[in-house]
Image (cartoon, rainbow, N blue to C red; front, side, top):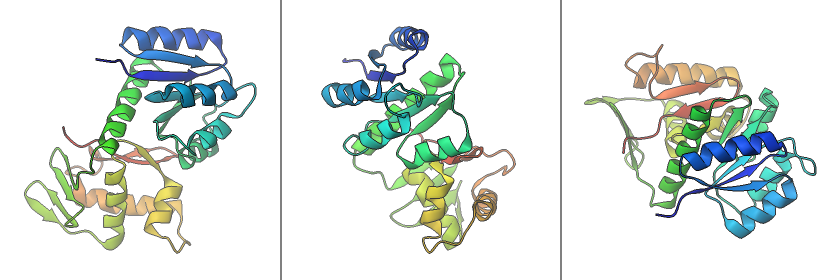
Length: 230
């Protein structure tokens, strides 16, 4: 079986060596680029399965690399950067990043994020499954029906729109800005209104809303619905 390939884009040689060793030890084939231009050329030539992208590059800002990459590639991109400000995280997700990991980070967390990105890409490549199941939660997008265990859950239109948006990107962080556009396309709403909507929705789809196992918060960035069961 051909190993999955990971393109690592970072101009710090020590980090490149660390990531190469960690990824290869876990069965991945590693490509390396130290500039944005080289990263784009490698991505076009080799078509990696996942891209790990630093934002601070010597020639192009990583967000510009992401923007150009998203014009023609759907490969999962995980931003791996010391820039942990909310604005950078939000912009990265808005430009098409699948995830955002702030340096320093642990190897196991990085590997987990890579696995999630690969699973999401594989699911997206298949015909979309209209029914989402995770533990005791079932969402049938085709029928617009939701169950918690054997009990059908009634949601308001906004609650259902929120849940459906998260189901379509299950396993990924969906930025607040994106959710606001989907739920209130006419505009005029706020992150606080979204927070309240998430709180209300949790009380409908979680057994223990204060300890949610389905709908998770990524602080200052957005929200994520756990991957469906295999």
